[in-house]
Image (cartoon, rainbow, N blue to C red; front, side, top):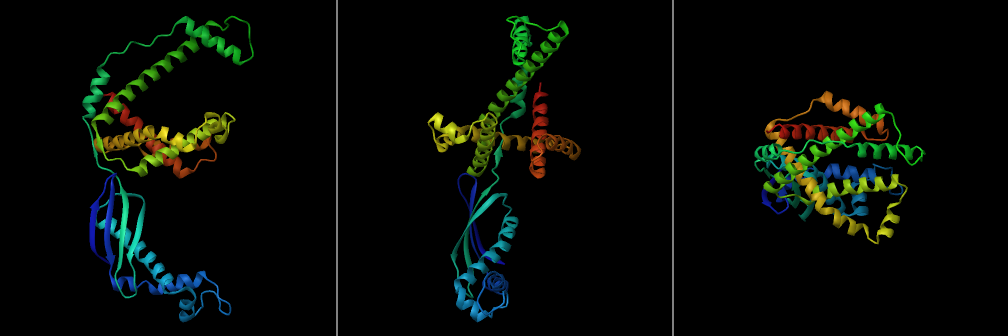
Length: 320
């Protein structure tokens, strides 16, 4: 239904497509366009949807009808173009009509963001080098245990100026602290691996993905301070900053997160790392039990991402 398609690659993983919907194809949408407009407007003396065509045209004008035809035509043409041109489009496209006239081809320009190509660094070698570095075995001192016991007692309103807790309780606290230190050590390794893979990989990161990550960071930040009883406006006033200044500060981190997720996705694809639907369903159930207002579809996407990322890092940690 279209012709003269030209694809031009732009920076930031964007693509510009120019072309035209053929005149005959464009004209074929006139009847549907008239029906849509007829059902939307009201004219005294006529029932809705039953307005004569000549009256309708005199009321709304020919351009309104052409614009409705264009929306219908491009709504059908766009997915066909994306499919036939093998474009991995993400997000909403920017569509501009460059020429529109009755009984003529509908000329257009579309700018869309595409899923960027990822050229990975040698992630196996990087992971192996990092995992081969010997780290001291985490230990827990008596002072750390006593300090933890003291904090627990104070949080429960017991202020005796000295530590309490049975030997069994102290052993439990010691085990908890040790496990926490092991988790911190593992997270430190993962960060080191991630940073080096990011440094050695090539990605033309699109603004769309960075902005999506920025919105996530802002939503999480707003939620965190709200739970502490602070409004975002009050925080900004106290910090003497605008939300735009805060977003500028967050942007490097948002870009890094977006870049890392694309890298992890590519590693998962290369290594055929997947999670089962049963694993995802179990995690979604857990999320919905703890967050009653959570959207089930979003929870599914989140669960799949988190579980897949965990398997990827386990794969990297095995490169010893």
